[in-house]
Image: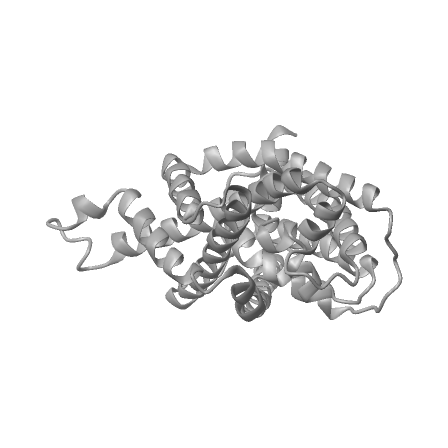
Length: 329
């Protein structure tokens, strides 16, 4: 149960970044749709969590240079959005510039120390964020479940979040038992369904840049909301940074030039990839949080759909080949 909880919080911590906790990406994807549609996305994400854990367990995840390049691009977009959101939130709290860069440096230090530190941090922060969203939902007391219905939106939203979370789940799946996979997927689906329903119900018809913060401000919960949204941003910042650093590290190790005996000793650790990831993403973050979410998150969603399709095809082929090799009765 303990391992399943950590896997689930790693997944949820990757999903609930700035766009999620501020309500920005929820408003972008669900607009005037019913909160029930948003809740259905949680079920989709729970299923996708199970799919990638299973495919990681049986080594079925699509691997190629092209796929790695797409993952890297999506990680840059996500990491940059989190840095921009950190800058925006912390400037409102402290009136000090470049706090987004400070968050990035702190995140990179944690990533260099290892993914176990990220799991521990997520296990602490995620329950606090869940509690805050539920409290805001209850205190707002002005929600409705009416609205349009869409079958595609939950799938598209699931695809947006699975691209990076799926990469982490594939790694976790290699060491997960079947029981861990079932429990962590159920926990993930329940957590996200509740949170998505609560957020969409709360922000319905709110068109501000950060709807959840806007509502929290009206309820005199500004400081609390800023802190918890920042924590939500930071958990996704860590996950996206971990993926970028791992990909850069693997690229250096497999490069005929960079892996040469004269160069590789200076680049072989995680510090150089971490610094490169930070500098590249920080430059991109200067576009601003709103612009990155509105312009580039739909691209991540499209890439996620491709990723899910590829994994499903590989899983079907695996099952077919396994059945074909099974002895006949």
